Length: 171
Image (cartoon, rainbow, N blue to C red):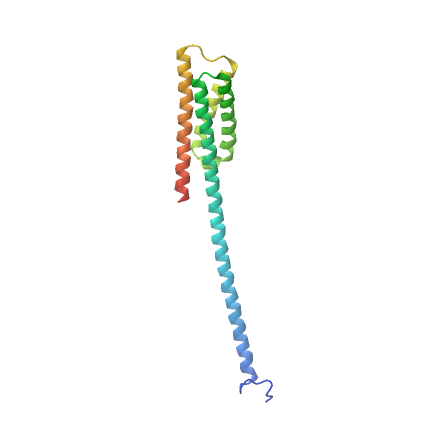
């Protein structure tokens, strides 16, 4: 036997068998590491998706909070009989509602139809205020202010439900 091929008295066939077992072990270890990496990547993807949804919900709540703020300002302009400012404000509300209702449609759920109804009320009030002077009679002023407050109440309720859904889905 050639001493260069032998390790401490072993024959060459034993060293080849050891080499085959070590290759198998390295292959299994590589496979385990690959599955571990895939599992981690799936978890990271899920976390990224959840973070994206959380940002989407937060953005929706912020957008509708801004619309509510505009509606409250609109009510103030109506109460103070500032027709020009009220018309500009209500048109801004209509534009933002249409944009945000489209952008956040899947998050709104059943509130999408309510938003459309509020948007129509705003459009009608904007058209009415834009075409004529501020109502002269006390009854007309009272009715206009009542409609304006109804818009604010509806938007406030929608925002409350959006925030509640966002909190619930965030848990």
